[in-house]
Length: 370
Image (cartoon, rainbow, N blue to C red; front, top):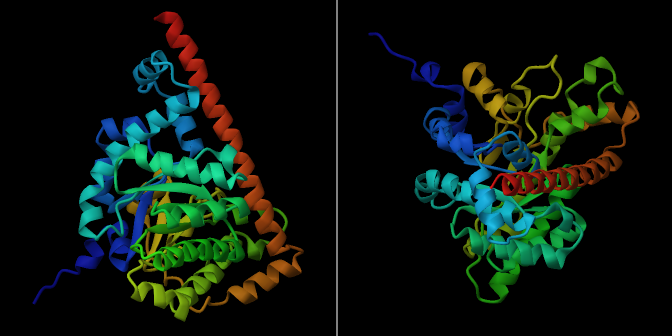
C-alpha cells in the first residue's frame, strides 16, 4: 500500500506551528496590509501575530507615501507630531488585529496578538509609562493589542502596575536570564495583586528576549569555534529558567486561580552574520509554548528552506559548558547583558527621534503643497 508522508509535504512554518511555537511577523507597513501580503502570510506561513517598534515604523513611513493623506488630515486637525504617529500606528495595528481576530478567538486569546510600543523616551519614567500604556490601550479599542514596555528597572515598575490594571503587556528589550526573571517577577506580582484585590487574574503577557545581538556583540572577539553560539546558549539558559518558573509552586498557584502563564518570546531572530545560515535562530529556538517573532526576510527564508532542529532542551542542555568557553575568552555575560539593554534602549530612542523628524518633515512638505 502506498502512503503519503504528509509531514514531508508540510511547510516548515506549519511544522513549527504544529510543534506549539507561535510564529509572529516582526514588521508592519501599510503596503503589507493594502496588498494582502500579511493575509497571505497568515494563510501560507502560519503567522499568528505581529510585533512593531519605532524602527519598523520609521522605515515604513519614511519609505512610503501611503501615510501622506493621513498625516495631512491629522496635522490639519492640530495634533502634535507624536499624536499623529500614534494615530498612524493604531490605524495600521487595528487592521492587523482584525486579521488575527479569528485566531485570537480560536485560541481563547492566547494567540493572535499585535504589539505597539510606548514612547522610548519614557523608558526611565514608570509613572508616565503606565499612563501612556493605559491611554494607548484604550485608544486602540481592540482586545488583541499588547502594549510594549521596556524591561528596564523603571519599566518593570510600570509593567507591574499595567498588569494590575488589566493591560496586556509585551515586555521588550530583555537580553539576559536575570532581566527575563525580573520581567517575570513584575508580571507575577501584578497578577498576585489582582488576586488580592479580588480581580480576574487572567491578563496576558509575553517576555521578549533579544537573541542575535549577543552574537553581533562578540563578533571578532571570540575563537572561530564559538562564532554564532552565544545567543543560542543564552536562549537555552533562559528557556531552562522559563520552564522552572512555570513549574514552581508560586506560579502554579496563580495559574490554579485562573491566571494565564506569561509566554517567552524570541526576538531579534534574524541572522546578522552573512556567513551563517539565514534560519540559524529559527531552527535552534524551536520550543512549544513560546513565540518566535521573525523579520519578513527570515520568515520567507524559513518557509522556503528551513527545517526544525531538535528543539530547546528543558534542562538547558550544554549551555553551561558553552558559556564557560565564552567566559574563558574574556566575555562577561552579566556586564554584556546590561550593556546590550542600555544600547537597545538608546537605539530605540534614536529611532524614535528620527521617526518624529520624518513625520514632522512630511507635515511641512504636505502643508506647503496644500
